[in-house]
Each structure stands twice: as C-alpha cells, then as structure tokens.
Image (cartoon, rainbow over all chains, first blue to last red; front, side, top):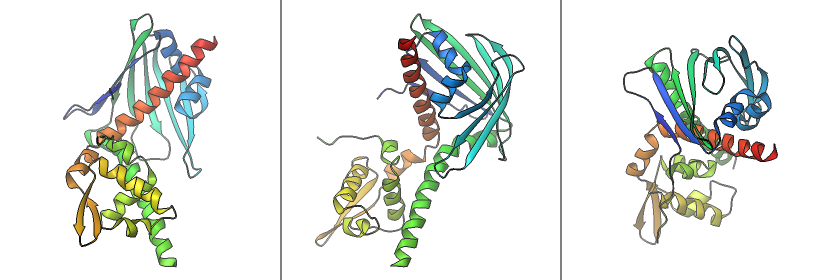
Length: 156
Length: 107
C-alpha cells in the first residue's frame, strides 16, 4: 500500500517533518483545522476551546480506553488563512516540554492539497521520546495483557 | 500463494501482541499458547498464522509437535520506532480526509 503520510526525523536536528497530500481542496483541508466541531470529529477529541486567530489559544481533551482524561493545549502565534498556522503544543500534566508546530497548507490542484507540519522540540532527546511514544504505548499494551494472563494463570 | 501482510497491522491486535510477548520468553506449541487465552483454539491458531505470515515467528518441529518462537529478523522491522508514529498520523489524516469529504458532499 502506498504511504500517504511521510515522516522524516533528520539526524541531529531536534525536529520532525510530517507531510501529507489530501484528496481535498485547500479550503476544506484548512477548515478541518479551524472549525471546532470538525477538529473534534477527525481528532477524536473534545474541543474545549479553539480560537482560530493570531494570539488565540486552544485546549483539547481525549479520554483513553481506561477512561482517563488527557488535556492538550497551545497558543496560536500566527494564523494566515489557507496558508499557515504556527502554534505551541503542550501535553498537560506530563514532563514533555512544550513544542512548536509550523503548519503549512498548500494547494496542489483545485481538488487536492498538501499539509506540511514541522515540529520543533526542546532537545534532540525530547524529540526521540515523542517519536517513541506510540511505539512504547504498543509495547505497554502487550505488557498489560501479559500481566493479566500471568495473574489469571496464578489464580488457577 | 502466501500473502505478505503488514507487520504493524499484525501487532495492532492486542491478542497478537500478547502472543508475541509470551513467545519472547520461550518457544511454545500452538496448544500451550492457546491455553493462555479465553478464546478458542481456532481463534488463536488464526492469530498465530497471521504472525507467521508476517515472518514474526519461526517454526520448529520437535517430534510430533510444532514449536513457535520469535523470528529476530521479523522483529527488526517493528524496532523501527518511527513507523508507529507515522501510522498514528496516517490514521488520523485518513480520518480527516474521510470526514471532510462527507462534509463537502453535505454542504
């Protein structure tokens, strides 16, 4: 299967690039980032606040399978409609430092568009930790399951 | 023809991840693997088959029994830690595309 989303983590640079081409006109792609009810739908998150403007801010809340709520927030530093959003991203109640995100929106054809996200981290090791998060999450899930299996074996 | 499956799709399933974790400790027969789960033997066999098709497992015949263990070469692909991060964004963006297409046709 073709990889529609490309991620690059340049060696020695505390940043990550995420690139994706969409089968959507530019205005719709941009709208997906600025209208609270649409953001909520595709991110699978509760949008507590989203002020799509320069010096506006946002706060999202997601609930994990165990029912714990996690909040994310940030401030929008630059807002150029259908061109660029620059914003910070913070995971509340974690030790992960705040990151800076540059989102660039481009029209490819009248029906297709492209999004480039450059994420800048506090340090190289902070970047690597963030990249490992989904991987580590998968491994932890396996450990949880194993623990359940082992405790069930012990009960028998 | 043996279908080459996606390794990450293989370990996306919690039961299959549990099988991989069990096999990280020792080689096991399909019967002994299945004893660890509430699912039927057939369901577990199917999971083992998928893991095997992804080259995550190695088979070894010992007498009448087949023993499964992890294939270190297959596991290398998983160790590429950026891939789950990419998959996460890919899934998210697929959702964005799907929702905005619906939104487009409604308006």
